[in-house]
Image 1: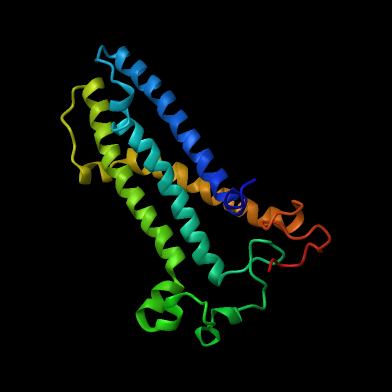
Image 2: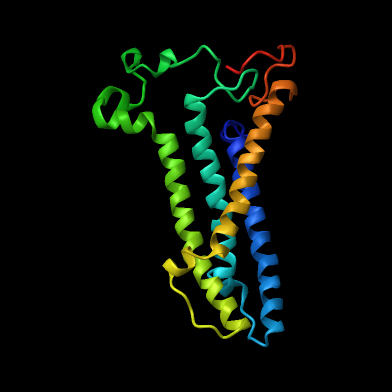
Length: 219
């Protein structure tokens, strides 16, 4: 295996799987959408046209929104909250890690550590900031694409006039879509946190070592 691929195998695998499943989602979604259009006697759309449709983009952003809310919230919560015995928690007695103290900076430390001030403040929180910004962008993508899809469905089913973005934001339909994803994401993370207390996965950094007692909290 080439060294670059070996060193980046985890991210390559994740993004590779993402690409495959996104393409498959678009193909199956396109077929489903055309079936729905045919039921209403509306003209079908090409696959390329479907990629910019509300039907596809709403589904994509709706899921991204929940994923990045979960990850951003998780990063923030694990900075301040602990769970005894969980591999997903920092040790109970740990507040700040010594390595987080900028006074311990090494020459090879990232430049914001040496710069101090605002660059350091932003850098110290950059992971959660980035994840929550992606969540915000996905939320807006879901809102705008969802408005387009909602209006198309209304036009096909009842000929109702289109609604604006702010009107769609106030509908139960929009919040139902969001909540059904948000609740499942936090359920999955909470389950991982609790299961990692008692269960193990050999060689995984998401698991405590096999020989460690259940009460031991992750490092």
